[in-house]
Length: 397
Picture 1 (cartoon, rainbow, N blue to C red):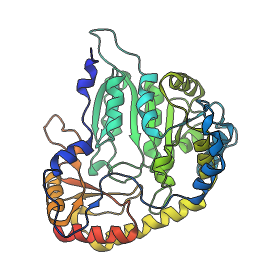
Picture 2 (cartoon, one colour):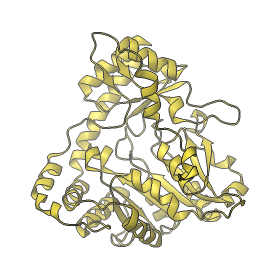
Picture 3 (cartoon, helix red, strand yellow):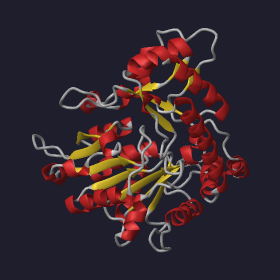
Picture 4 (cartoon, rainbow, N blue to C red):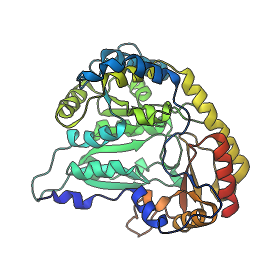
C-alpha cells in the first residue's frame, strides 16, 4: 500500500534537467560548468570550522529538538540587529525553532497548519507563486490541501497579484508561501506588498509563510523582512512564519542549519511534530550555527563577491536577454525565448548547464507556462569561474 497522494508530486527540476541533458554530449575541449543549483561555492567561514572542531566531543550526545539556548539566543540577536526589533518582540525560547536547513521545515509546516477536509468536502487551499520552489508544492499535497498556483510575472515585479485574489479562495486558504527575495527571479517585495499580504492573512485567517533564505544576498538595499512589518503593525507574530538559512548567507549549505520564527503556539506545535518526524541538529552544528549568526563580517565579505559577479554579468549581457541586476539572491532570470532549447544548446556548444524556467513553473489555464522563455543561471561559482562561464553563455546564444 502506497499513499495515493504521492502520485501527485511533481518531479524535481534537477531530475528533469538530467533527463534532458544527460543523453547529450557536452561541448568537447571545454571544462563543464554547472550554473544550475543554488549551492554557493565560496569558501565557508573559518569560524564555522573552528566551532565544529572545538565542539566535536559533543557528537556523542543526543541533541534537543529545540536546539541549544546559545543558538536560539544568537538567532534572536541577529533578528534584532537585522530588522531593528525591540528586545521583547522575539522570545528565543518561544518564537524560534532551529532546523536542519529550511527545506524540511518549509515542507513540514504545511501539515501543522492545515486541517484535512472530510471525504468529499472541498479541500483547503495553499497558495503558491509560479515560478516556485518545488518543496512548497509537495508540502501542500502531503498536507491534504489543494495547491493553487498564482502567476508571478514581470508585470507584477515577479510576485503574485494580491488584488486579483478571490475572497472565496482566501477564505478556504490555510497558507500562502511567499519567497522574498523571489526565487528564481531575484526581485524584492516592497514593504507595502508585505503589509498587504499580512493584512490578508489576518483577515482571512491563513498562515503567511515567508521564505527569506536569500535575504542577506542583495545588490544595494537590504530586503524588508516580514518581521519588520509585524513590528510596525503592533509587534505580534500571529499568522506569520518566517524562514532563514545559513546555506546562502554564510556559504554553509553542507552545515544544514536554519531556523523558523513565528507565533509561540505554532512554534510549540511545530516542535512537537518534529520530536516525532524531524532530526535534531547535532550539538557541534548548533555551536557552529551560533557562531555564524553572531557574526556579520563574513556575510558582508560574501555579499561583496556577489556584487563582483553582478557587475560582470551586467558588463557581459548589457540589455541582452532582458538582463537586470538581481535585487536579491544570486540567480539571473534570462529571457532567451525558449529555455529548454537554450539549455540544450549551452550544454552541447559551451559545456554549461543552466536550468530551464519551464521546470520551475506550472502552465496556467491557458496552457501557457510562464517559465518557458527563461533560463535560471546560478552565480554561485568564484568570480573568475563565473566570468568565464557567463562569457561562454553570452557567446553561445
